[in-house]
Image 1 (cartoon, rainbow, N blue to C red):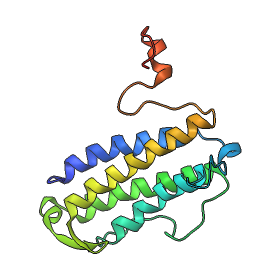
Image 2: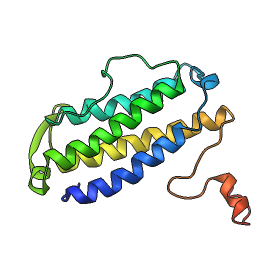
Image 3: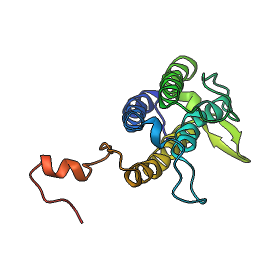
Image 4: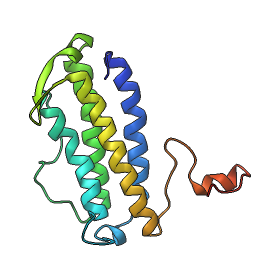
Length: 166
């Protein structure tokens, strides 16, 4: 749980940039690809990450800009990138403008539970990281390059003159 807005803003800058860098490696050819009926398409997963930013944060009373939570995923990765960038920037702007450290201790009912705003910010980052992991697996299965986030990816090992991890 975050107790300082400054701490969230620092983490969010890194996390949202990491997500954006991964999404930027996707091309339109694989957006609708699904490995099987039990997984989301790459487009739907990217869109879910994007629409959750305003869907979750607006439930706390903030006014984060973004696409409607019930909207369908665009068919263009460029549209997804623009929407994600706008929503991610809006999260930062709204937290910085509307909340202070005391606001992080205020509780709001989200998803049938009372969550402190600082906890909601933590969940937002964890939710994004969770789906970012799923996204990288789908990207690998589609033959796309994956960028590092919390450590090197396979391709980075060679640049570090290390054998790839098994």
